Amino acid sequence: MVTAELNKPLLEKPICKNRYSSFKVVLCPTTEGYGHAQRVSAIASRLKMNNIEYLVFSDEERIKFLSQTSMRCNNKLHGIKYIYRNNGDLNVFPTVLRLIFGSLYFPIDFLRTLIMGLKYRVLVNDYNPHLTCIPGMRTINITHYQPFKYGWREFRMNFYSYLVERPIVWGERVRSFFGLSENFAMDIRPEIVDCEKVYPPIVRDVTRTKAKVREELGLGKNEPLVLVMGRPYQKNFLMENHDFYIYKKIALEHPDIHFYVVTPPGIFKELEQENLKFNGFLPDIQNYINASNLVIARSGFGTVSEAIMYGVPLLLFCPKGHMEKRKNALMVQKYGYGKIAENLEKDVLNLLDEPLYRSNELQKMGNGLDHFLNILSQNDL
Image (cartoon, rainbow, N blue to C red; front, side, top):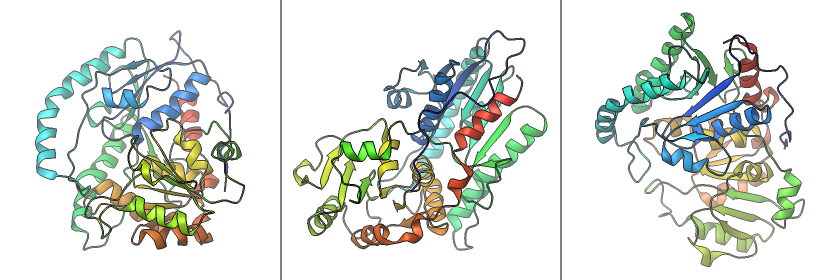
């Protein structure tokens, strides 16, 4: 498995400066999920390394998620919010209503961003549909909405593709053609990642070596580590969410396998034993992903991206009606990065033993963060 490079040096080419006295960046992760905030964190850490001033503009929840770092932040973004069912599916009608009423705040978001343009020269937008083009600011839109080919029976997914993915792609092409904004498209499919128009995902740099993390956890060199970052969606399959008890069973029968479960503090602590540990939120979770032999998670693009780029197989819980996460899970399974969970106990043991899931062509193309910062440094404002 590949260990990410530590302590990235300064940008290969310095950030260019023209008539402005300094280069200043607004990083704007959307208010839905945490993968967008993870990417912003990755970019911010490199900007800080290069002494470049930046501001993170998002909502309170995203800012709280990023609060472990010394970032300058503005939490006044209204953004967008979706509503989900307990089984992880998108609750369509309430979501549509929320988006309709929430859109009343979009002009306020736009105006606030426009005012920021008086001081900041670049907007990195990941991905707020109403902030894809700001007059007076160089706008770079980060997206991972490349269309995916679904079977003809996948009515909901095809509907999602034609309603969301394709309009986003065409919108970015039109804006790029007229020079109104730029597009940084990411994907995990090696055959469409060309590092010119489509790039590998942006992931955070690891800050500690794999050996150091495993030493802190008290693990030997050859002891498998399973990192658990999510739980099954309710009614997703017939285990009644007793997933922690399944990990307990595996841990008892296989003392050499170690589970590290990231969950809210205090939950299921009574199940702990020598090779089954529970921990709360980890701000540097990328270090633990990098040190693991298997990651069990829900199929968010941020977690999926980091596991793939660090060469760690994935076992994913996948809702049937969450368009984006279902797509991510399908791609992970199709391209050999891991599989969708069906029988949790068998899947864990099989993935730890199966070398097929350790082959990864995308790693050879490098972290999308390097490509992104190269683009950021090459283009004049």
